[in-house]
Amino acid sequence: MEPSDLVRILKGVPETQLRLIKLAWELTGEDGSIDASKVALHYKEIGEASDEAQGYAEGTKEAAQCLKSLGRSNP
Image (cartoon, rainbow, N blue to C red; front, top):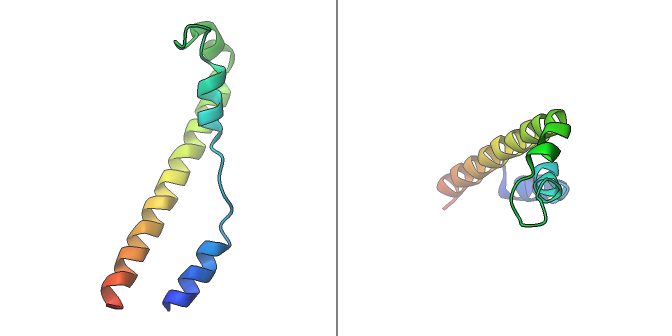
């Protein structure tokens, strides 16, 4: 893969807004602590958002490894 190919691919990747971040704010009480009753109500959504964040992290790690590899092969 040429560097220009990788740049073109990366430019096509949309910005990601992780639901887990939004949920974290929604699950806090007025004092800033996690509200256990809100967590209980959103348990399924938390699991789904956590899975989404994990997948995003794995994809990001893979992309970083590709960039490092490309950098080593094209000094």
